[in-house]
Image 1 (spheres, rainbow, N blue to C red):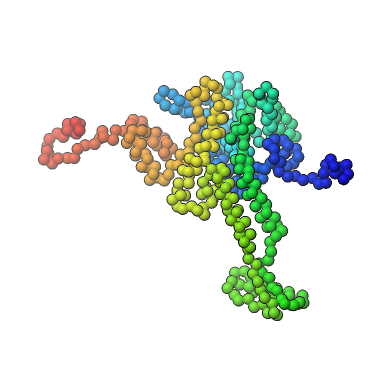
Image 2 (image 1 turned 180 degrees about the vertical axis):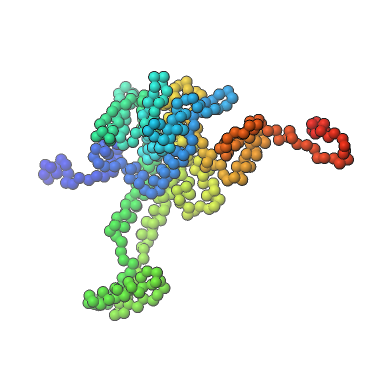
Length: 407
């Protein structure tokens, strides 16, 4: 072995890098294991469903008062969550953070504060451009590479970089794809095998065989006759006449190939399970019914979206809000668009809430239908106040209003 081969190897290979440092993957031109798993169609769909739903829903900052929670409209974070920043819309800001959390288990956002400690701007950074580094004194710094400036680096302290983590282990997060590495590795291997077979292993659908040798002219004539008369839609149901002592045999999928197809289906359900997404939400409707599909959105919110939203909102609030503000302020997600149901369901809910004096009519208009206020509908409705006793013909001519008032 030569000196060059001894130190550098025979051939450069860019394989998956099983480390969490994104700088290594960027420098050596490789990719991490969950980068590859995230490119699977079901993984991509799970990430898109959760990130899109979180970004489309209102993430509202509330303040707890003695009269109940109210929207903290005067806090700068309230406007950033609902209206976005000068560079990013609220949708794109939330989507970039949630997508990074879903793919890599971590999301990084640089927070710009004013002199009073109030947030002025939120700048999300791509996961592969940030390298956290733990110092010996218990502090953490973040080396941020700027791809627009030839990857020049800036060093930010943990006081200005919000580091959001999923299933945190010490000071790093774990990707759902990495947490399910065994299943994801099998699924990825199956997909790579199918890809290789698709590129190099496709074979003909049938074969003509002869007991002896035939010349090229006869072979070409029989091949043309078979493709012309028995291929495609027009050849369906016809009887093949090979001739010249030839026999035709069909080449069907083997048992191993059929098993691979079943493994691919099972892998799709395993990916949805890793994210907690109901299978119907990502298009896996093979084992669903109409009744389960109607409950899919409710299950999506309860089992999936709310957990991811709380992971994002609570860590963001803990970083941005002061210790005093965290006692009274919190971020909540509004999933009304997914759980409201049809018009008939909304009408029944409004009637129940208003008649039981839980909501005023204006509050019901705003919550259920997003309609403006109407004068005179801010008072609670007493369902028994306007109830009058049935008219008694025997007491015709008497004043029954007093009886009605007493009732």
